[in-house]
Image 1 (cartoon, helix red, strand yellow):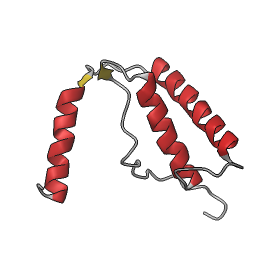
Image 2 (spheres, one colour):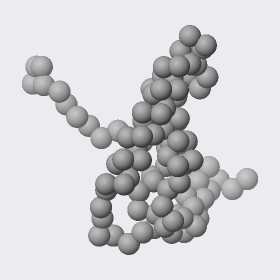
Image 3 (tube, one colour):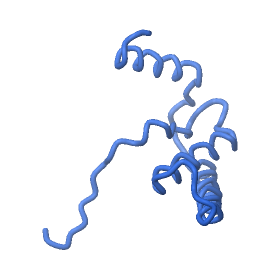
Length: 101
């Protein structure tokens, strides 16, 4: 096993939401928001310094472009999910996990 790379499935960041197979499809704003969250997570900061601002912004744009490309090319035979139904399920899971406030 020495030198082997082991790949494991890690849980996705809770702030990044699934964008594929929804009706209506994900908007460019949703793609941008997911890309921003990803770059923030990888960079370890929500607000880059002035010295890192250009690299941060370029990374967000590159991730957004790659995400949009991916979403345009993914196929599925499953029917699209309804956003309202999925949001209600998420609220129910959160209420169970954190209790009603």
